[in-house]
Length: 203
Image (cartoon, rainbow, N blue to C red; front, side):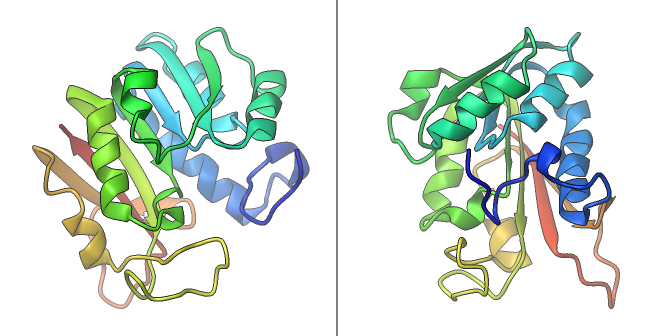
């Protein structure tokens, strides 16, 4: 597996690396919501898939890590084994993905939305992957808005907080959080910039 600026691989990074700590913090944040059959969509190297399998081993049936990068999936299988964790190669934008994978009680998708040219379609795809009563935990960086190029060459765009909130109208319940470093807040404080938004939604 080749290193890229977008890939988080703990064994290639210092334990104090801020980007690594932010990503790991998101999985710890999501862990209390995880139950049943779990999908970690765009799992990358697989460390987070293994994390939630370990942290929630009494609450989960299985955790499936999916990524379109075959090398990443093979690396995850070699490096982040857990008896409840399984890894598969698949494309998050495949319209037939729900038929191929089935449905889930929990879907996690961290730092994926900004890579999607059609973020609305992607959220509808996640809804289709969730069972009734299931929970989605999704995070994305905030930016200048839909359709506006950003500095990151790997991102199509980065949504504004208002655009992000509007994506989840199809869910029965939704709560938003804001991440700054390894800390999470349930409301924006005046004068504070929050780089990341997190949606916790129930179908």
